[in-house]
Image 1 (cartoon, rainbow, N blue to C red):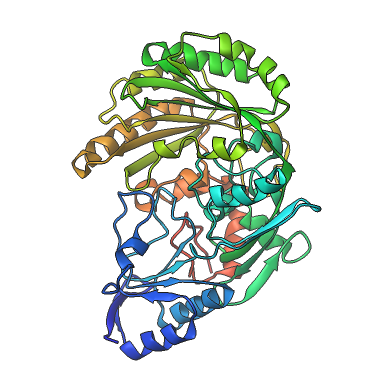
Image 2: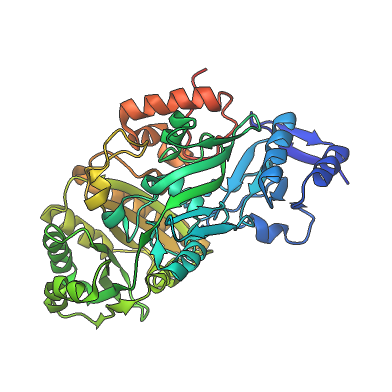
Length: 468
Protein backbone atom coordinates (compact mmCIF):
# COMPACT_ATOMS: atom_id res chain seq x y z
CA UNK A 1 0.00 0.00 0.00
CA UNK A 2 1.37 3.42 -0.99
CA UNK A 3 1.66 6.19 1.54
CA UNK A 4 -1.01 8.92 1.63
CA UNK A 5 -0.86 12.63 2.26
CA UNK A 6 -3.38 13.40 5.01
CA UNK A 7 -4.75 16.33 6.99
CA UNK A 8 -4.30 16.46 10.76
CA UNK A 9 -6.66 17.80 13.40
CA UNK A 10 -4.53 20.95 13.45
CA UNK A 11 -5.11 21.48 9.73
CA UNK A 12 -1.55 20.65 8.68
CA UNK A 13 -0.47 18.10 6.08
CA UNK A 14 1.55 15.00 6.87
CA UNK A 15 2.26 11.62 5.33
CA UNK A 16 0.62 8.39 6.48
CA UNK A 17 2.78 5.34 5.81
CA UNK A 18 1.41 2.46 3.79
CA UNK A 19 2.15 0.00 6.59
CA UNK A 20 -0.05 1.96 9.00
CA UNK A 21 -2.90 1.98 6.50
CA UNK A 22 -2.60 -1.78 5.94
CA UNK A 23 -2.56 -2.43 9.67
CA UNK A 24 -5.76 -0.40 10.00
CA UNK A 25 -7.34 -2.27 7.09
CA UNK A 26 -6.70 -5.63 8.73
CA UNK A 27 -8.03 -4.44 12.10
CA UNK A 28 -11.56 -3.69 10.81
CA UNK A 29 -14.31 -5.78 9.25
CA UNK A 30 -15.69 -2.93 7.16
CA UNK A 31 -14.34 -1.73 3.84
CA UNK A 32 -11.48 0.79 3.90
CA UNK A 33 -11.40 3.03 0.84
CA UNK A 34 -8.57 5.19 -0.49
CA UNK A 35 -8.95 7.71 -3.35
CA UNK A 36 -7.76 5.15 -5.93
CA UNK A 37 -10.28 2.49 -4.89
CA UNK A 38 -13.47 1.62 -6.73
CA UNK A 39 -16.46 3.02 -4.88
CA UNK A 40 -14.54 5.87 -3.29
CA UNK A 41 -16.26 8.64 -5.27
CA UNK A 42 -19.70 7.22 -4.50
CA UNK A 43 -18.89 6.85 -0.80
CA UNK A 44 -17.66 10.42 -0.40
CA UNK A 45 -20.81 12.00 -1.87
CA UNK A 46 -23.39 13.49 0.46
CA UNK A 47 -26.90 14.83 -0.07
CA UNK A 48 -25.86 18.43 -0.71
CA UNK A 49 -24.30 18.55 -4.17
CA UNK A 50 -22.55 21.81 -3.29
CA UNK A 51 -20.24 19.81 -1.00
CA UNK A 52 -17.31 18.27 -2.90
CA UNK A 53 -14.63 17.03 -0.52
CA UNK A 54 -12.06 14.25 -0.75
CA UNK A 55 -11.11 12.35 2.41
CA UNK A 56 -7.77 10.56 2.46
CA UNK A 57 -9.52 7.46 3.86
CA UNK A 58 -13.11 6.26 4.24
CA UNK A 59 -13.89 3.46 6.68
CA UNK A 60 -17.33 1.95 6.08
CA UNK A 61 -18.03 0.59 9.55
CA UNK A 62 -20.03 -2.58 10.11
CA UNK A 63 -20.29 -2.36 13.90
CA UNK A 64 -19.09 -0.85 17.14
CA UNK A 65 -15.70 -2.53 16.96
CA UNK A 66 -14.98 -0.79 13.65
CA UNK A 67 -16.01 2.56 15.11
CA UNK A 68 -13.68 2.11 18.10
CA UNK A 69 -10.83 1.04 15.82
CA UNK A 70 -11.41 4.07 13.58
CA UNK A 71 -11.39 6.48 16.51
CA UNK A 72 -8.22 4.94 17.92
CA UNK A 73 -6.49 5.03 14.52
CA UNK A 74 -7.42 8.67 14.01
CA UNK A 75 -6.18 9.60 17.48
CA UNK A 76 -2.89 7.76 17.03
CA UNK A 77 -2.21 9.59 13.77
CA UNK A 78 -3.93 12.87 14.78
CA UNK A 79 -6.19 12.72 11.73
CA UNK A 80 -9.01 15.13 11.01
CA UNK A 81 -12.26 13.15 11.40
CA UNK A 82 -15.69 13.46 9.80
CA UNK A 83 -18.58 11.22 10.87
CA UNK A 84 -21.29 10.23 8.40
CA UNK A 85 -24.69 8.85 9.33
CA UNK A 86 -27.23 9.63 6.61
CA UNK A 87 -25.10 12.38 5.05
CA UNK A 88 -28.18 14.59 4.74
CA UNK A 89 -27.01 17.65 6.67
CA UNK A 90 -26.91 20.77 4.50
CA UNK A 91 -23.55 21.88 5.96
CA UNK A 92 -21.85 18.73 4.69
CA UNK A 93 -20.01 17.95 7.93
CA UNK A 94 -20.19 14.23 7.09
CA UNK A 95 -17.19 14.49 4.77
CA UNK A 96 -13.81 16.21 5.04
CA UNK A 97 -10.81 17.01 2.88
CA UNK A 98 -7.72 14.95 3.60
CA UNK A 99 -8.87 13.29 6.82
CA UNK A 100 -10.67 10.11 7.87
CA UNK A 101 -14.36 9.78 7.08
CA UNK A 102 -16.01 7.39 9.55
CA UNK A 103 -18.98 6.16 7.52
CA UNK A 104 -21.81 4.59 9.55
CA UNK A 105 -24.24 4.26 6.65
CA UNK A 106 -23.95 0.46 6.54
CA UNK A 107 -24.92 0.11 10.21
CA UNK A 108 -28.65 -0.39 9.65
CA UNK A 109 -29.70 -2.76 12.42
CA UNK A 110 -33.13 -2.15 13.99
CA UNK A 111 -35.06 -4.10 16.60
CA UNK A 112 -38.64 -3.21 17.47
CA UNK A 113 -40.23 -4.33 20.74
CA UNK A 114 -43.97 -3.98 20.11
CA UNK A 115 -44.86 -4.86 23.71
CA UNK A 116 -42.71 -2.15 25.32
CA UNK A 117 -43.23 0.07 22.26
CA UNK A 118 -39.53 0.74 21.88
CA UNK A 119 -37.02 0.49 19.05
CA UNK A 120 -33.25 0.17 19.12
CA UNK A 121 -31.70 1.59 15.96
CA UNK A 122 -28.21 1.82 14.50
CA UNK A 123 -26.98 5.16 13.10
CA UNK A 124 -26.90 4.30 9.40
CA UNK A 125 -30.69 4.10 9.13
CA UNK A 126 -32.72 6.66 7.23
CA UNK A 127 -36.15 7.77 8.40
CA UNK A 128 -37.78 5.70 5.68
CA UNK A 129 -35.93 2.55 6.72
CA UNK A 130 -36.76 3.14 10.38
CA UNK A 131 -40.46 3.81 9.70
CA UNK A 132 -40.81 0.79 7.40
CA UNK A 133 -39.95 -1.52 10.28
CA UNK A 134 -41.84 0.23 13.08
CA UNK A 135 -44.98 0.61 10.95
CA UNK A 136 -45.19 -3.17 10.60
CA UNK A 137 -46.43 -2.97 14.20
CA UNK A 138 -48.46 0.23 13.65
CA UNK A 139 -45.88 2.23 15.61
CA UNK A 140 -43.70 5.28 14.99
CA UNK A 141 -41.67 7.91 16.78
CA UNK A 142 -41.32 11.59 15.82
CA UNK A 143 -38.74 12.05 13.08
CA UNK A 144 -38.55 14.50 10.15
CA UNK A 145 -40.24 15.31 6.85
CA UNK A 146 -38.05 13.58 4.22
CA UNK A 147 -37.55 9.81 4.29
CA UNK A 148 -33.95 9.93 3.03
CA UNK A 149 -32.80 11.91 6.10
CA UNK A 150 -30.58 9.96 8.52
CA UNK A 151 -31.98 9.22 11.97
CA UNK A 152 -28.66 9.94 13.71
CA UNK A 153 -28.01 13.56 12.78
CA UNK A 154 -31.69 14.45 12.95
CA UNK A 155 -32.06 13.06 16.48
CA UNK A 156 -28.82 14.47 17.89
CA UNK A 157 -29.79 18.00 16.84
CA UNK A 158 -33.33 17.73 18.25
CA UNK A 159 -35.39 16.36 15.40
CA UNK A 160 -38.87 17.53 14.50
CA UNK A 161 -41.33 16.64 11.79
CA UNK A 162 -44.88 15.46 11.24
CA UNK A 163 -45.38 13.96 14.70
CA UNK A 164 -43.58 16.55 16.85
CA UNK A 165 -46.70 18.43 17.91
CA UNK A 166 -48.21 15.10 18.99
CA UNK A 167 -45.23 13.50 20.76
CA UNK A 168 -42.33 15.98 20.92
CA UNK A 169 -38.94 15.86 19.25
CA UNK A 170 -37.05 12.74 18.20
CA UNK A 171 -34.55 13.54 20.96
CA UNK A 172 -37.37 13.91 23.52
CA UNK A 173 -38.23 10.28 22.81
CA UNK A 174 -34.75 8.88 23.35
CA UNK A 175 -34.57 6.37 26.18
CA UNK A 176 -30.82 5.78 25.92
CA UNK A 177 -27.87 5.87 23.53
CA UNK A 178 -24.63 3.93 23.21
CA UNK A 179 -21.73 6.02 21.99
CA UNK A 180 -18.01 5.85 21.38
CA UNK A 181 -16.17 8.75 22.99
CA UNK A 182 -13.09 10.57 21.76
CA UNK A 183 -10.82 8.29 23.81
CA UNK A 184 -12.31 5.16 22.22
CA UNK A 185 -14.51 4.14 25.16
CA UNK A 186 -18.04 2.80 24.61
CA UNK A 187 -20.54 4.33 27.05
CA UNK A 188 -24.27 4.10 27.61
CA UNK A 189 -26.01 7.39 28.33
CA UNK A 190 -29.50 7.37 29.83
CA UNK A 191 -31.40 8.97 32.71
CA UNK A 192 -29.47 6.71 35.11
CA UNK A 193 -26.10 6.23 33.36
CA UNK A 194 -24.00 9.29 32.52
CA UNK A 195 -27.12 11.50 32.77
CA UNK A 196 -25.07 14.63 32.01
CA UNK A 197 -24.06 13.15 28.67
CA UNK A 198 -27.63 12.01 28.01
CA UNK A 199 -28.78 15.62 28.49
CA UNK A 200 -26.16 16.84 26.02
CA UNK A 201 -26.77 14.40 23.17
CA UNK A 202 -30.45 15.40 23.10
CA UNK A 203 -29.86 18.51 21.00
CA UNK A 204 -26.09 18.98 21.28
CA UNK A 205 -25.32 17.25 17.99
CA UNK A 206 -22.29 15.05 17.38
CA UNK A 207 -20.00 16.97 19.71
CA UNK A 208 -19.54 14.31 22.38
CA UNK A 209 -19.04 11.04 20.55
CA UNK A 210 -20.25 8.70 17.84
CA UNK A 211 -23.64 7.24 18.73
CA UNK A 212 -23.80 3.60 17.67
CA UNK A 213 -27.27 2.81 19.03
CA UNK A 214 -30.41 4.87 19.69
CA UNK A 215 -33.24 3.55 21.86
CA UNK A 216 -36.56 5.27 21.12
CA UNK A 217 -40.04 5.35 22.59
CA UNK A 218 -42.71 4.45 20.01
CA UNK A 219 -46.40 5.37 19.69
CA UNK A 220 -49.38 3.96 17.78
CA UNK A 221 -49.53 5.89 14.49
CA UNK A 222 -51.49 5.53 11.28
CA UNK A 223 -53.05 5.75 8.95
CA UNK A 224 -52.88 9.56 8.88
CA UNK A 225 -54.78 12.22 6.96
CA UNK A 226 -51.97 13.78 4.98
CA UNK A 227 -50.85 15.39 1.77
CA UNK A 228 -50.94 18.94 0.44
CA UNK A 229 -52.97 21.67 -1.13
CA UNK A 230 -51.24 23.57 -3.92
CA UNK A 231 -52.24 27.18 -4.61
CA UNK A 232 -51.25 29.64 -7.35
CA UNK A 233 -48.50 31.99 -6.21
CA UNK A 234 -50.93 34.91 -6.61
CA UNK A 235 -52.73 33.56 -3.52
CA UNK A 236 -49.51 33.18 -1.47
CA UNK A 237 -50.17 36.05 0.95
CA UNK A 238 -53.70 34.85 1.71
CA UNK A 239 -52.52 31.24 2.02
CA UNK A 240 -49.89 32.10 4.64
CA UNK A 241 -52.33 34.29 6.56
CA UNK A 242 -54.87 31.47 6.58
CA UNK A 243 -52.17 29.05 7.70
CA UNK A 244 -51.25 31.31 10.63
CA UNK A 245 -54.82 31.83 11.77
CA UNK A 246 -55.95 28.24 11.29
CA UNK A 247 -52.89 26.71 12.98
CA UNK A 248 -53.22 28.97 16.00
CA UNK A 249 -56.33 27.09 17.16
CA UNK A 250 -55.70 23.66 15.60
CA UNK A 251 -55.18 20.64 17.87
CA UNK A 252 -51.76 19.07 18.46
CA UNK A 253 -52.67 16.24 16.09
CA UNK A 254 -52.51 18.74 13.20
CA UNK A 255 -49.18 19.85 11.71
CA UNK A 256 -48.64 22.01 8.64
CA UNK A 257 -45.39 22.61 6.74
CA UNK A 258 -45.99 25.67 4.58
CA UNK A 259 -43.77 26.55 1.63
CA UNK A 260 -43.38 28.90 -1.31
CA UNK A 261 -41.75 27.15 -4.21
CA UNK A 262 -42.39 25.47 -7.55
CA UNK A 263 -44.94 22.87 -8.56
CA UNK A 264 -43.99 19.70 -10.47
CA UNK A 265 -45.34 21.50 -13.55
CA UNK A 266 -42.83 24.31 -13.05
CA UNK A 267 -45.25 26.96 -11.77
CA UNK A 268 -44.50 29.19 -8.77
CA UNK A 269 -46.90 28.09 -6.02
CA UNK A 270 -47.78 28.23 -2.34
CA UNK A 271 -48.09 24.90 -0.59
CA UNK A 272 -49.71 23.73 2.62
CA UNK A 273 -48.36 20.28 3.45
CA UNK A 274 -50.35 18.75 6.28
CA UNK A 275 -50.62 15.78 8.60
CA UNK A 276 -53.46 14.93 10.94
CA UNK A 277 -52.32 12.20 13.30
CA UNK A 278 -55.52 10.84 14.78
CA UNK A 279 -58.90 9.32 13.91
CA UNK A 280 -59.60 9.99 10.23
CA UNK A 281 -63.19 11.14 10.76
CA UNK A 282 -62.03 13.65 13.34
CA UNK A 283 -59.26 14.76 10.98
CA UNK A 284 -61.74 15.43 8.19
CA UNK A 285 -63.76 17.57 10.58
CA UNK A 286 -60.69 19.52 11.73
CA UNK A 287 -59.51 20.07 8.15
CA UNK A 288 -62.89 21.21 6.85
CA UNK A 289 -61.96 24.94 6.94
CA UNK A 290 -58.73 24.17 5.09
CA UNK A 291 -60.61 22.21 2.44
CA UNK A 292 -62.91 25.19 1.94
CA UNK A 293 -60.19 27.84 1.72
CA UNK A 294 -59.07 29.51 -1.50
CA UNK A 295 -58.91 28.17 -5.03
CA UNK A 296 -56.22 25.50 -5.07
CA UNK A 297 -54.61 24.08 -8.17
CA UNK A 298 -54.79 20.67 -6.48
CA UNK A 299 -55.97 19.09 -3.24
CA UNK A 300 -53.87 15.99 -2.57
CA UNK A 301 -54.94 15.42 1.03
CA UNK A 302 -56.27 11.92 1.73
CA UNK A 303 -55.96 9.05 4.20
CA UNK A 304 -52.59 7.37 3.74
CA UNK A 305 -50.02 5.24 5.48
CA UNK A 306 -47.58 7.23 7.59
CA UNK A 307 -44.74 5.84 5.47
CA UNK A 308 -46.42 7.29 2.36
CA UNK A 309 -46.59 10.74 3.93
CA UNK A 310 -42.99 10.49 5.11
CA UNK A 311 -41.75 9.87 1.57
CA UNK A 312 -44.24 12.09 -0.27
CA UNK A 313 -41.88 15.07 -0.53
CA UNK A 314 -38.63 13.22 -1.26
CA UNK A 315 -38.79 14.21 -4.92
CA UNK A 316 -38.66 17.86 -3.90
CA UNK A 317 -35.36 17.39 -2.03
CA UNK A 318 -33.27 15.06 -4.18
CA UNK A 319 -29.66 14.21 -3.52
CA UNK A 320 -27.11 16.04 -5.64
CA UNK A 321 -28.84 19.42 -5.87
CA UNK A 322 -26.71 22.38 -4.77
CA UNK A 323 -28.32 23.55 -1.51
CA UNK A 324 -27.64 26.65 0.57
CA UNK A 325 -29.83 27.43 3.61
CA UNK A 326 -30.21 30.23 6.11
CA UNK A 327 -32.63 29.77 8.98
CA UNK A 328 -34.09 31.33 12.12
CA UNK A 329 -36.97 30.87 14.50
CA UNK A 330 -39.68 33.53 14.16
CA UNK A 331 -41.35 35.57 16.90
CA UNK A 332 -44.65 35.33 15.06
CA UNK A 333 -46.01 35.07 11.55
CA UNK A 334 -47.04 38.71 11.18
CA UNK A 335 -48.52 40.30 8.06
CA UNK A 336 -45.22 42.15 7.53
CA UNK A 337 -43.27 38.90 7.75
CA UNK A 338 -45.63 37.28 5.26
CA UNK A 339 -45.31 40.24 2.89
CA UNK A 340 -41.51 39.93 3.05
CA UNK A 341 -41.68 36.22 2.28
CA UNK A 342 -43.94 36.71 -0.72
CA UNK A 343 -41.88 39.61 -2.10
CA UNK A 344 -38.61 37.68 -1.98
CA UNK A 345 -40.06 34.49 -3.38
CA UNK A 346 -41.36 36.46 -6.35
CA UNK A 347 -37.73 37.11 -7.37
CA UNK A 348 -36.20 33.63 -7.06
CA UNK A 349 -33.12 33.14 -9.28
CA UNK A 350 -33.82 29.41 -9.69
CA UNK A 351 -37.07 27.41 -9.65
CA UNK A 352 -35.57 25.26 -6.88
CA UNK A 353 -35.13 28.25 -4.56
CA UNK A 354 -37.87 28.87 -2.05
CA UNK A 355 -39.04 29.28 1.51
CA UNK A 356 -40.13 26.69 4.06
CA UNK A 357 -41.94 27.27 7.31
CA UNK A 358 -41.84 24.40 9.79
CA UNK A 359 -44.37 24.37 12.63
CA UNK A 360 -43.60 23.54 16.26
CA UNK A 361 -45.64 24.00 19.42
CA UNK A 362 -47.85 21.35 20.94
CA UNK A 363 -45.90 18.62 22.75
CA UNK A 364 -42.57 20.26 21.86
CA UNK A 365 -43.45 23.27 24.00
CA UNK A 366 -44.58 21.19 26.98
CA UNK A 367 -41.19 19.62 27.71
CA UNK A 368 -39.46 21.35 30.61
CA UNK A 369 -37.03 23.99 29.26
CA UNK A 370 -33.99 22.47 30.99
CA UNK A 371 -34.85 18.82 30.26
CA UNK A 372 -32.59 18.58 27.19
CA UNK A 373 -29.95 20.60 25.36
CA UNK A 374 -32.49 21.57 22.67
CA UNK A 375 -33.56 25.16 23.23
CA UNK A 376 -36.27 27.57 21.99
CA UNK A 377 -39.23 25.36 22.89
CA UNK A 378 -41.54 28.37 23.08
CA UNK A 379 -41.38 29.21 19.36
CA UNK A 380 -44.05 28.26 16.85
CA UNK A 381 -42.34 28.70 13.46
CA UNK A 382 -38.96 27.85 11.98
CA UNK A 383 -38.12 29.75 8.80
CA UNK A 384 -35.75 28.51 6.08
CA UNK A 385 -34.53 30.59 3.16
CA UNK A 386 -33.40 27.92 0.70
CA UNK A 387 -31.19 28.65 -2.27
CA UNK A 388 -31.00 25.63 -4.55
CA UNK A 389 -30.05 24.83 -8.13
CA UNK A 390 -28.59 22.09 -10.31
CA UNK A 391 -26.18 24.28 -12.29
CA UNK A 392 -23.04 25.29 -10.33
CA UNK A 393 -22.99 28.47 -12.40
CA UNK A 394 -26.12 29.53 -10.51
CA UNK A 395 -24.64 28.90 -7.05
CA UNK A 396 -23.53 32.48 -6.43
CA UNK A 397 -26.90 33.95 -7.41
CA UNK A 398 -28.81 31.46 -5.26
CA UNK A 399 -26.56 32.09 -2.27
CA UNK A 400 -26.94 35.87 -2.62
CA UNK A 401 -30.70 35.51 -2.84
CA UNK A 402 -30.94 33.22 0.21
CA UNK A 403 -28.74 35.53 2.29
CA UNK A 404 -30.66 38.67 1.28
CA UNK A 405 -33.97 36.93 2.07
CA UNK A 406 -32.67 35.86 5.48
CA UNK A 407 -31.41 39.36 6.23
CA UNK A 408 -34.80 40.82 5.32
CA UNK A 409 -36.45 38.40 7.78
CA UNK A 410 -34.25 39.37 10.74
CA UNK A 411 -36.71 41.95 12.16
CA UNK A 412 -39.13 39.04 12.68
CA UNK A 413 -36.56 36.61 14.12
CA UNK A 414 -36.16 35.55 17.75
CA UNK A 415 -32.41 35.43 17.16
CA UNK A 416 -32.46 31.70 17.82
CA UNK A 417 -31.79 28.97 15.27
CA UNK A 418 -32.31 25.21 14.93
CA UNK A 419 -28.87 23.61 15.02
CA UNK A 420 -29.71 21.08 12.28
CA UNK A 421 -30.41 23.93 9.85
CA UNK A 422 -27.12 25.75 10.36
CA UNK A 423 -24.71 25.86 7.43
CA UNK A 424 -20.94 25.67 7.49
CA UNK A 425 -19.17 27.45 10.34
CA UNK A 426 -17.12 29.62 7.97
CA UNK A 427 -20.40 31.06 6.69
CA UNK A 428 -22.47 31.06 9.89
CA UNK A 429 -19.92 31.96 12.57
CA UNK A 430 -19.48 30.52 16.07
CA UNK A 431 -22.01 32.95 17.51
CA UNK A 432 -24.74 31.27 15.48
CA UNK A 433 -23.99 27.93 17.18
CA UNK A 434 -24.32 29.72 20.52
CA UNK A 435 -27.64 31.19 19.33
CA UNK A 436 -28.95 27.65 18.91
CA UNK A 437 -28.67 27.06 22.66
CA UNK A 438 -28.69 30.37 24.51
CA UNK A 439 -25.98 31.42 27.01
CA UNK A 440 -26.87 29.09 29.91
CA UNK A 441 -27.24 25.91 27.87
CA UNK A 442 -24.20 26.72 25.75
CA UNK A 443 -22.07 27.09 28.90
CA UNK A 444 -23.35 23.72 30.12
CA UNK A 445 -22.51 22.14 26.75
CA UNK A 446 -18.99 23.59 26.85
CA UNK A 447 -18.52 21.97 30.27
CA UNK A 448 -19.60 18.62 28.77
CA UNK A 449 -17.23 19.13 25.85
CA UNK A 450 -14.40 19.82 28.29
CA UNK A 451 -15.21 16.56 30.08
CA UNK A 452 -15.84 14.19 27.15
CA UNK A 453 -13.88 15.74 24.26
CA UNK A 454 -11.32 18.23 25.61
CA UNK A 455 -9.15 18.09 22.46
CA UNK A 456 -12.13 18.78 20.15
CA UNK A 457 -11.56 15.49 18.34
CA UNK A 458 -15.19 15.69 17.13
CA UNK A 459 -14.97 19.13 15.54
CA UNK A 460 -16.63 18.69 12.15
CA UNK A 461 -20.13 19.47 13.35
CA UNK A 462 -21.96 22.53 14.63
CA UNK A 463 -19.03 22.79 16.92
CA UNK A 464 -19.09 23.49 20.63
CA UNK A 465 -15.45 24.35 21.30
CA UNK A 466 -13.82 23.16 24.54
CA UNK A 467 -12.12 25.72 26.79
CA UNK A 468 -9.55 23.47 28.50
